[in-house]
Length: 66
Image: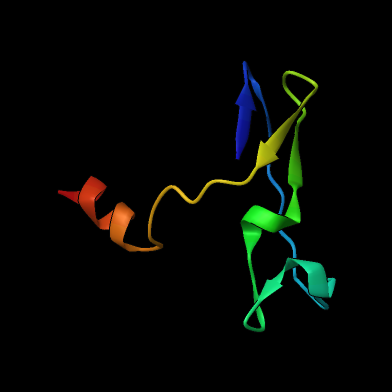
């Protein structure tokens, strides 16, 4: 959910297909550091690189619950 003042925007989606070029696979698995993915921030109108792994799914969230 993105909130700006009294306005907010949420997005819900469903992945129906995934494809990847062989150049971004390592031992048959996707290597995000090779993908060169970008994300668009509608608030700042900026594009950002998505490359670095910053934590483990579910484990990081458990730390915040304590």
